Length: 393
Image (tube, rainbow, N blue to C red):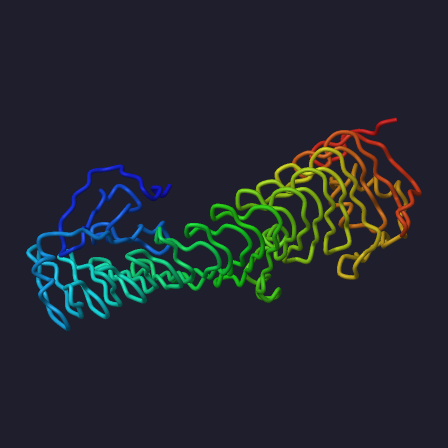
């Protein structure tokens, strides 16, 4: 967590720089209450920035400075250097560059020996830089912060605490990008995040850098290309599109999604998985309505197949509607087929009953149905891991 402005934790040290006091807080803190952060604690763009400010302090050196005016070069006893304009009082005024003994530097406009106007602050050790507007020694206005250590860039309105609040944009070295609302450099409010490596875009609400509330995820990868890169199981489980609720950065709550194999799920989610009650429409014509547990079918559910694609038909006596329920039960008993095997083999068939571990488990009913889902014949049985155990009367 960032240290609040005004916090005084940690050991402090102060040294006079002309008529400026440079106050630093121990590097264990993430923010400086006053003073320019030193090179020993560079501030990455992707993390909480330090508060950058300069406070006026009348020192003994100010009397010497009062006699000088115009453009000059000055070296202080602490080895800080200033090159630029000063006014009749000897205060830094106009354009100038101040270089600290630790290698940090500020180049820009000054007023009354304070950073005032547009300027560039550079951390000497890391090379990180902040170009923005300043007001009486404090950051205040539009700016751009570049972190060389991780290649990230942040643009937006920088407040006095050195962080962006309001509309801003994060660009990362890997090509990812976020544009939207920020609060103290964190994604907070409505915003859009784009992942370059898989062309995925999220648009929705954020809180403390995590997706929350309503949002939408779209993957713009070509489906054929994606299927080549995924196994059949991965294509069935990988979500190419989702619209619904999020919690703790995951799909959570109610929503609907489309998989890479064109299957569609609508219902309840938990931690990014199907969980609760939902409907899953498979690309081969099957449809499941019922319970899910951690991504697999569980509880009570109905699965039907009211049509057969040409690629799923078999060259046998059993095709589409040309089968009797007795034939189907015989296949289960004698050929060692499971209920799911039967569903893949036949058209116009359904199973209605108990599920566990993504397979029929417990009591259930196998039915022959018509194209409207009307039951024509039924068989009641006991099932274990999808296999018929016995008939129930």
